[in-house]
Length: 412
Image (cartoon, rainbow, N blue to C red; front, side, top):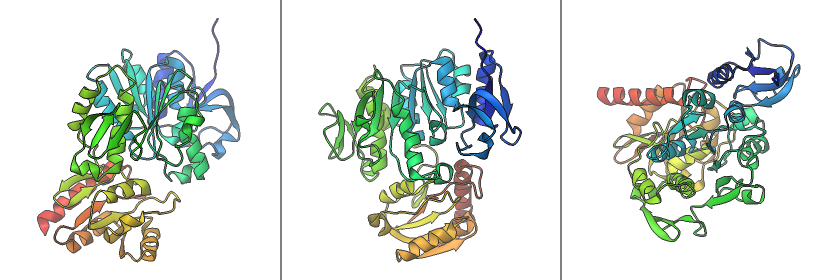
């Protein structure tokens, strides 16, 4: 018996282009429209593009069960998925897991990194594991997704322009774990205020990791990471300055600990891991490019690992409040704000008695910081906001920062 299902792909872009390929590969009919191309319709399923919020007016006259591309891939293929989400660290943790697991398994890295899960399942029919970076935009529209392993790294204030309030944002993130069944695993950060009680809410097996506590199977003590009370990983001095980096290690090793893979070998691979591009990359002796930063939590993490900082920041306003930890504020010599949020940034830092200069462009902000930096002071580019006011992506602004810096260095 053939079951007829009416499906709408709503919103054109990378994710739904992948859905189109998957549906065609599965011989399933569908409609594909941008949200301004359709005014009404009745469907069994509506696969929304990640950037379309659930409250968008386009849903007023279009009816059906709203899902995301990751749910479509799961329903049609039921592949082995490791789903990773968090306000920060998703790309790094996914990449670490890929670099480790590829030594034993046929593994694919995909999701919210520019290579959609639907494209991935079509292209890699023999893959054993899909490591999927998942955004809150995707997770707000899942119903039956049941990842084999879910990883929740952290939750901090972010994307309030899309979710409207923090509760909606948190609920979207928690969906990844709440939808799992009893024979699955949930790796989560017990230090995070939004995640600390997650074990009471889920059916899956909870496995917590913590920077502060030694009661977990994997933990930090002094200069080492321990597994089952044995030293397995010696942390470098620069690692110890970066709490978020150590938390990434803990999350990755927690995943490896429940798989058929050598912890010892995983640690060896991690020691040679190179940082993800534009995530606190040191591009010169006193200059760091953290263009991937899109919220206060990531900029906080970057500041915490450095001292004597000239901070360059700014970008697209997502209506989030600025909050930098008091200990980190003491590390700032001057702030150079640019773009749409420059005045918002200036007001915040001036109220904290920290000098803040405003500029229209990144180039102007960098030139000022370059001229003012002396001795062993640091220039840190950590935007704290999304790139969309002046750039198409964080990659674009990260590349431009590097080019501007070396042009400036060669001229002056």
